[in-house]
Amino acid sequence: MKCLGRTLPTITCASQGLILQVKGFITGYPCKSLSSMFNDSQAFTNPKSKTGAGFRAFLKYLDYNDECEWVISENVRNMFFKRKSDKYLRPIDIKISEMEKRMYTCTAESVSSAEYSLPQSRNRAYMIFMRNPSFLND
Image 1 (cartoon, rainbow, N blue to C red):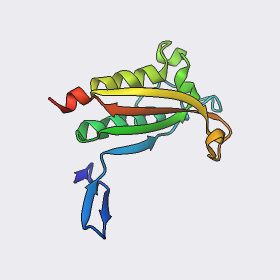
Image 2: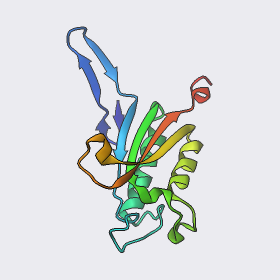
Image 3: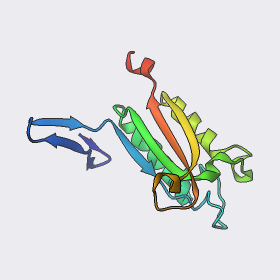
Image 4: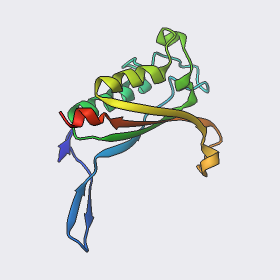
């Protein structure tokens, strides 16, 4: 299967001759416009920012790939904070709203990556999106 000109990954089990298609993906995109480490705060959805362009590319991929059943996404914990540049909305709520339009449900947490042996000491936003089962049965 191809998406945006690229072949989607498959997994081959040589001993059984099976080819399994991956039904989800793990993603992260630039956080420069969200991070408190930079003075480049821009709206989360601004397509001219690296964060906004990454978010739009993420949505475009989902719109093209209607077989995607799950997504795990990671970004800075500022996803959970209301920001003036986002009209006092939380970026996580903007993202969840866009995902709900595509029939996904979400669970999200801000966790310390170091507690899970990842080489970061900052808290990160982790989001798990699952395709709404009622949508799959229609």
